[in-house]
Length: 506
Image 1 (tube, one colour):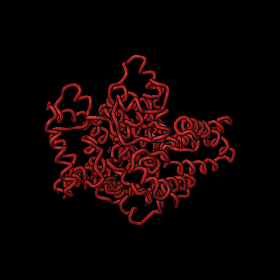
Image 2 (spheres, helix red, strand yellow):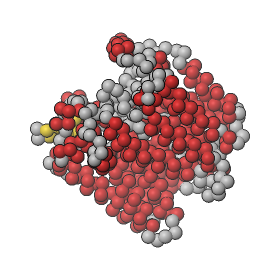
Image 3 (cartoon, helix red, strand yellow):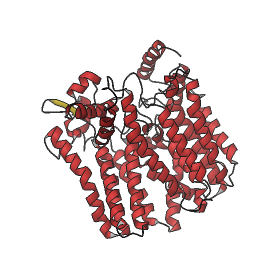
Image 4 (cartoon, one colour):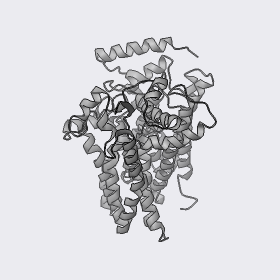
């Protein structure tokens, strides 16, 4: 691509701002690590320190939680092992120079997160930016789309946590990108190497989050488009992750085919796994509506700019360009959303947005630019993007683990927590800054990245600055209305108030 390609500097600004916020916020929500993360942390600690995946002793030292499996009298993590296995090398290296952790919120786990989830997320964002800018015309809108996806979706928070969602999203996107590189490469050896790498990445995503297995299968089907032999290379690439999964299952549960989900220790998870297929029943129209518009975490309510993807898919197909990828994106998104519409716990418990949708969020960004050809479509998209970014940035500045019944958490929880003096742990707080002052640097980074994205857009209606201002105004307007809480939620928040008041103030 030409060095004069529009938007190149803006894309870099978005990635740099994302990297800065990912490092600045520790990702740890005090007073202890979330069960989802602690379960993985204890498995890693147990393996490196004691040579076993059994977390019995780690529970005694780092804390108990409900995210456990039980087999042959011992406890194990109930998580898919892909991210756990990726965390082991950086943890083992860090242990050569730092003491053993005394809690699940120790700094060593922040560094492990940076070396795994965050690095993968940044690599995926860089390549996503390049793919979005594949033509000179689309290069103008690429920075804005990249900015919206990075800061206006739950990917923002999960890229700085030890949850597997952003990790899987990055691996799946990198897998697709590897396929594309294999098809465009002139070296005959690369025709086999790239599909093999694609299979390796897709397989690792599948063993990191089992719900992505259908997406990995769609990727396998996509590999046939370039060369039929690519499917063989892709399949060979998946053998490594599958072998690791089999070895892990044998070590923990005595059989290569027994997953941690089949050995849940918590009664509530045992009951869930016993309904339908591991908690998944027939998809329902009601669940589809909730996934998209639920007041506590609906995908299109929290990230309305994603609605442009519907028109984008249609216009992409009509353009007759790269139809295989158009079908792939549609198939990959459906492969995740359709089973999710039948999952009894689609809300994900305490979380930010529909966290189970995050694994396909980067792929779902690919059609967006096809709907941004006109000045008005770009202007309205900018309105929706500004709204989405303000929403997710605000929520992630507080505790993003939102109860599933809290309507519009930016107002019902986040602003209230920040006004109470509690913000997400960050480097500013560690340096002794006031809680409000500590948010200045990351907010400035997001604002600077946004400012870089506006000039390349070209003609926009309404004008770019006005459109961004309208989006921010609409979001601020939502903060004027106080959603009604149920008695249970009101009691939960009252208890949280007492905890916040007891914290030392800067």
